[in-house]
Image 1 (cartoon, helix red, strand yellow):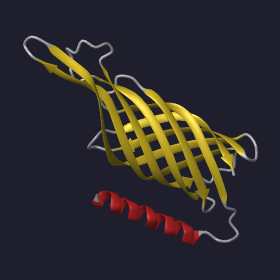
Image 2 (spheres, one colour; image 1 turned 45 degrees about the horizontal axis):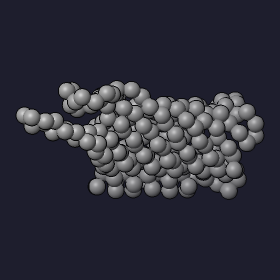
Image 3 (cartoon, one colour; image 1 turned 90 degrees about the vertical axis):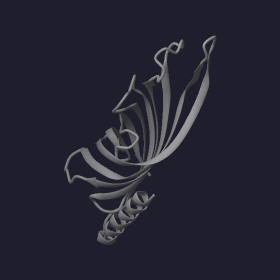
Image 4 (tube, helix red, strand yellow; image 1 turned 30 degrees about the vertical axis):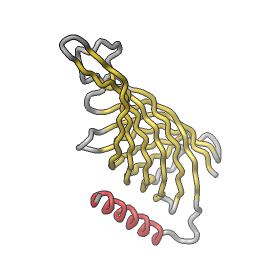
Length: 195
């Protein structure tokens, strides 16, 4: 809990510093971005799955912006019980990530724009698997859904190509750090609309 509070204060501090460095001449820009891709975990992944995200970005200055993001990722892990007579023997995992991001936009004079960001992510994870019991005369299994939540540190790289004054195509790679419960990653493409 103290880690999350310190990360929140650190994010607030960087946001205030960015706000204090903006001047009234800087044109503010608000963008909404959504896309699809694939996602997985760095440890114990059986197969990658889908990734869907929605991000709201507000540019504070030429190079700095803040963003909020919702990301839904799903993937599969191998089952715990190797002798379970279920096919496929796999755990269905769904992560819902809610992120606050501080972004740095590299000053590039072209239609291609590059940004890196980091911040704070609150994750809720649901895993669907089986509870298995075995007695000398019978075996029994039934579906079980477990859930927990934790905090992660996101690292995000975004590359955008402008196709009009208001619409960009975006490619991105995101890595969520959490040594305790395992790191996750996602990658995909999307569209970014200037509001």
